[in-house]
Length: 405
Image 1: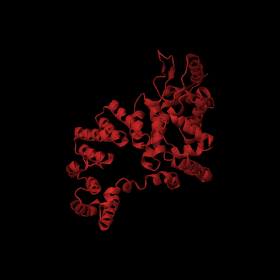
Image 2: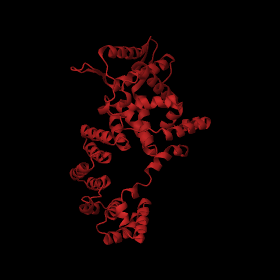
Image 3: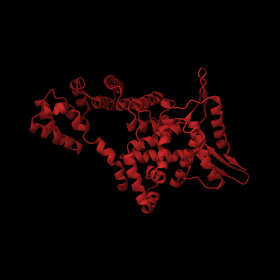
Image 4: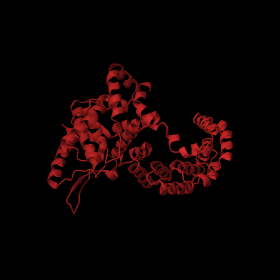
């Protein structure tokens, strides 16, 4: 969508130049003529013309047999041509090389995986993690192997570890969101992860639309406003349990986030119920209930999780900056293109203002900011039983508003 391109500008500029930066020694070893030949070959691969580039790579590989950059780029060209056996054959040189980075282990591991040897692929990824323990990419690949084997607990473990060590790498959120949103007990985490993926990789329109569509489906399938002649009722089924845990030693009371989120959604939904609205998960309705959830969360808990649930804090920042409508039209634009286009015609300046704000205030994680179950209580405000009872009473009141005669 052309009108969204400005939003991706900052991120695309940050990604530019990655190829030449970490391989300067390898480039300096080449003559000026061969350097230009390498650049040309790489450009051919990037332009889906790997077959044309291979002759140049073969010549350079013979001339510079110990040059890691040349050998890696040749292997990448072979990979793009689906010549996975040759990639595997080439690994002996560049995986043991001092310049081998996480991408090299990912490349070889993927070649093993595609040719059917998942066990060997996992070995390569784990070998890479010994050298690069903070590689979100390698945890992603391990998670994908377990996902394919339907060992979902191990898949979650690796995706979430990848998120913890590399919190701004979007692909782990994407894969975990798919699993969470298709599970019985993880839908709230799926909503959070899907939105994080969109914000961390706004230039990936395919994933953006898939994540947004899954979010809309999740809201639509798990929120029911029921009307009959005797009674109206509201049902929200995003989480099967609303857990409270008391530490036996410190007596700190812990409220789990999915139950809190499900409950704070019910306040704005109750207004819809009283107005006899049909819930369709349209963009205006999503704007209303998501805004209401943030307002209720802050009113009842005073940002209980702090930066450990940074999605709530970030959404509050969007609201305070005056961009809430534009933000939600951006998030859900691919699900309702006609609805977005009609809104944009009348709010172009408003949307452009949001884009400028976001490019200056992007969603970033790390340094205490997180959105994961495993880090939920890192910045949690300790609750004693009295304060926990006060918050729980407020949540209970919001929850009990889910039906009306």
